Each structure stands twice: as structure tokens, then as C-alpha cells.
Image (cartoon, rainbow, N blue to C red; front, side, top):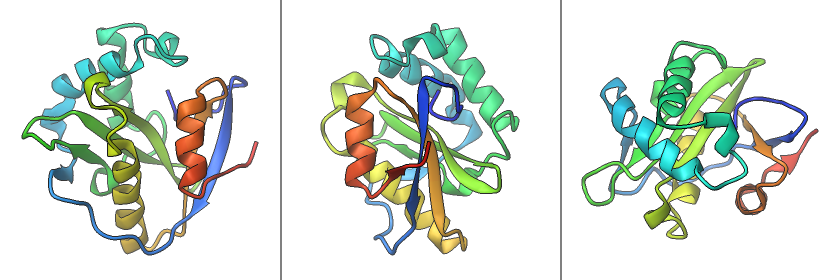
Length: 162
């Protein structure tokens, strides 16, 4: 999970700056997305440094339900997005408020769709929504071994805070 601050993770923070609104094919998260996103999350995490955090399809769905229930801070549906460039969900970003700051709790993309910029665009969509809501920063936690994610966050202006 990107949302926890365990020793194997480091916290990151980025100031929010003006960014364009989400592109076509992006929409706000809806509770009806849970079953599809649970399977998608497991596919995205399988074989990565974050696989153990999810453990399987049931674990992914459990994590998503816990997120919506406030386990990682109050859920922000108006700042959480689903990417469905072909009319079906292939990536998502879920945001909560943790320690009084918006937290990118989860970001995941289906393996066949990685490398297309969907994660980057989802983060920008989140940043746009949060800035419009009056927030000035976005935080996240990332597994230290997840080099790909760390590079993405660095390129988007995040800096490691611990």
C-alpha cells in the first residue's frame, strides 16, 4: 500500500501548482468501481515490491474497502480518479487525508497499460482537484524498492521527507 508509513517506505510531499484538468477518459471514483478496481489493483501489484501488501485479489479489495471506510484517513472521492481510456477502468488513484494533509493512498495501473503516462496523468488529475479544493500539498508513501514509482514521483516534483 502506498498509504502506510512503514520502515520499508519513505514519505514524499509535493506542493500543488496549477495543472490542467483531467483529460478525456478520466472520471471521479465511484463506489461501484470497487470490484473491478480490486482485481485491477491485484494485477498491478503482482510481481512488484508491493505485492506482499495486497496478498491477492481479496486482499486488494479489502484494502480498497478499508480506504473508503477511513482506515487511512477520511476518503476524498472528489479527488480520486479512475482512468478508462477505452471505456473500462485500467488505472486509479485514491486519495485520503492523513495527518491533516491529502495523501495519495493508492495509485495503480493494469500491467498492459503501464508506460503510457496514465499514472502521471492520474496524479495530475488529483493535484488539480486538490488545488481547486484549496489544498496546497499532496503527500504519499512509496516502497523504497519501487524505483519506477519513485522516479515518477520525483519527476512530478515530489521530494522525500522521511
